[in-house]
Amino acid sequence: MPFLTIETNAINKDTNLGEEAAALVAKALGKPISYVVTTVRAGQDMTFGGARDNKGALITMKSVGFGDKAALALQLTEFVVRRLDVEQSFVNVEFVDLHAADVAIGGRLLG
Image 1 (tube, rainbow, N blue to C red):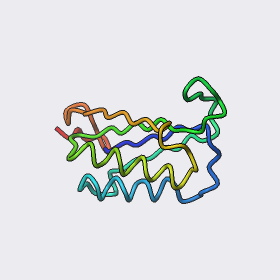
Image 2: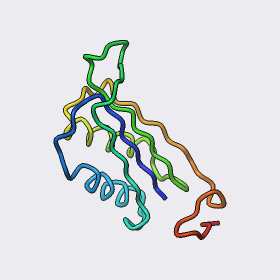
Image 3: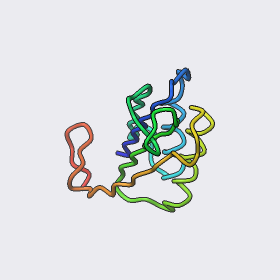
Image 4: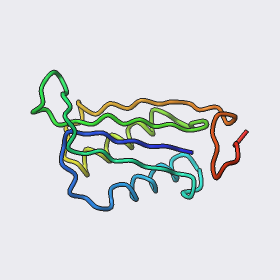
């Protein structure tokens, strides 16, 4: 519980991307890294600005509570721009605030 998904039309040659993204999220949100789940879907058939040639990313960040969303959006954007060589203007971040009563880890509800 935080759940981070990165979808991109860029090719991911970075085998540590998921682990390093998890560390970034855990630190930024002050949550145990053992709760963080990351999914990276690279090489997707996606368009940004109406064109497949534009390299970008759609980041979905789900969590029970957030601190400074603006700061986290910038950190996530800069991270994928650096690591995936995508254009910053084509990086989109969606935040989904989860209710603790709707999230379970290991079969136990958080709220």
